[in-house]
Image 1: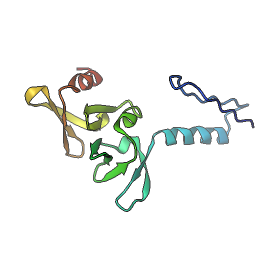
Image 2 (image 1 turned 180 degrees about the vertical axis):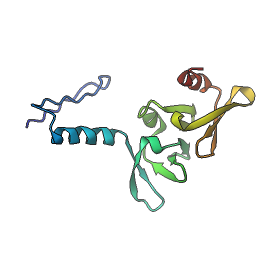
Image 3 (image 1 turned 45 degrees about the vertical axis):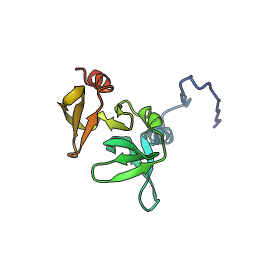
Image 4 (image 1 turned 30 degrees about the horizontal axis):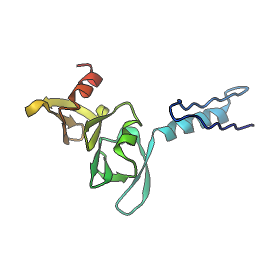
Amino acid sequence: MKIIIEDIADDAEEEIIIRTHGLDDDVLQLIARMKQEKNMLTCIDEQENILPLKQNDVYYFDAVDGRVYVYLEKSVLEIKKRLYEIEELCDSYLRISKAQIVNAKMIERLSPMFNGRLEAHLKNGEKVIISRQYVPDLKKYFGV
């Protein structure tokens, strides 16, 4: 088997091409592993343990004092990425303020607030405020 790695321009889309004589178990396992790792985040808990996390388990991200935290159903972890990097990871991650990104799949309902803001009620019972600057993007995502 030959492996070829090409360095491409920053604005070019990354791609993986698999040329094979047939889809055997090894190739299928490789594809599954690549897909799984693409959907994983690496976080840190209070004891400095490094934990893999599925993107779909995230409720929202919050930046506080130069650190970014990941809010899950019942716990909070730290992630060593910036919000702009996180925003690009998943189509359902939507910016809702300068310091927060929400996983739109975790929104149960939206309620209007004062000054054109919205309040998102998440599936775990938490509420986050959507700044009026980001309301149009959220409405567009939901087709409203």
